[in-house]
Image (cartoon, rainbow, N blue to C red; front, side):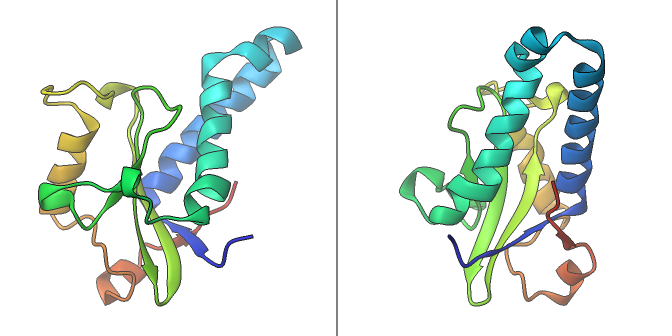
Length: 147
C-alpha cells in the first residue's frame, strides 16, 4: 500500500473518461473473447495498473526521469507501446499529480511534431501544467482520480 494521494489534471481525467467510454462500447458490442483480447481494453488495464499500483510504489524511479526542460516531471511508458503518462509528485504533501496521457493523434514517434513529449512541452511552456502541488493556480484544476 502506498501513502500517496492520487490526483489528476482535468485533461488527464478527460482522456481517461474517453478511454473508459471506448472500453464500455467495446464491452457492449464485442463477444467476451474478442473484448478480452482487444488492444484498447488491454491498454486501459495497463494504464489503470500503472496509475493505481505501479507508479505509486515509487514515483521517483530513475526510469521515470525526464531531462531538459521537462526534468521536474516524470513519465511512465512500460507496456504502453506509443503512449506515455506524464506526472509529477511531491513527498510533502505526499501526492502524485497525473497530468497528461497522449491520445491517438499524439503517438510516440521521435522527431515528430505530434510526439507526446513535444505536445507536453508546449503545454508546460504555456503554463497549463506545473510541478508544484502547492501552487494556488493548480489547486483549481486538481480533481480526485476516480476509475
